[in-house]
Length: 401
Image (tube, rainbow, N blue to C red; front, side):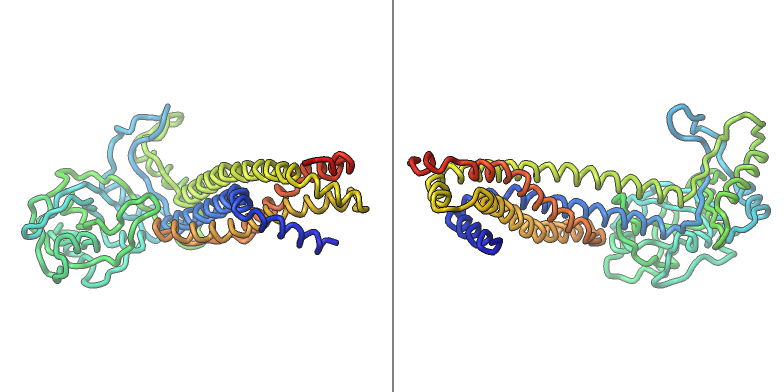
């Protein structure tokens, strides 16, 4: 019986192929949009998590000032190298304490120039931020202590200034200072926020302070905890030590902020997950619109086929058989739309993740849920027209023109 109902449903759909296709479009778009949005959202979440993982889940950063509404002013006393040395000497369970300062500066080579972030730091920065060198070397201790004008550049800077030429051993001007290129960083590409991570120049901190910034300030201190060390304890020790050094009495708010990369990663992941859910919910509304379209077409179909229904009832067909026929027709419409929507959604997700340069993370569960929901839409919105067809009076139906 079910086989015959499916056969009749397919015949009815093919008789009005264009109308059936237009009816299925609502389901196709709804299912495709849900799958595409969730897949893109999952890829974005994975990209954010991967970018933050490059800094290490056991990484903390500390900056002067508190930020946000109702917090202490960001115009707090900056850190200096003595604060860094104190953290290195007194913190336990850490593998690196790295000072950094940054400024957007014009770098020039020949007739080419570019405004790029210049970071003053130490060799520990390459470890904490997972930077590998493709060619060249890191800074020598004598270069760090003496503040020699040497630099390590990112792939974007190399491409813009040197093109296909060799960069190692050449001198570029950084803020009017001749600086020897000693190393080239391996490419990382764009971050999840769209920042070009390869657009960077790294110089010794002392050179940066003396010849670029013109002060001895340290903008950010990065602390990498050893594997297995509780970052919460490291953070508490940092806060206690810095409060002592900055003479902050009991009851007063810190004039610095410590951020745990693990907490940031969790927050970012939760945010992207919520946004993915909201986008999927919005896309799911089109499934309801598609369901209404199916109900509308099925009502039209019942009206068009009233005489056919009357004949079937007159020769002995049961109301349940007529109900099943039209209900199966609605489910087949929505089911076919769901299958095409799955293919459409996966295709759109593949194109979008490629364009956005995020991983393609397919969740089979959402595919099954979207298809099941499309079938349920067919049942729910096809039931009323099917019921109407089943309850037609055979005599009145046979009189219908």
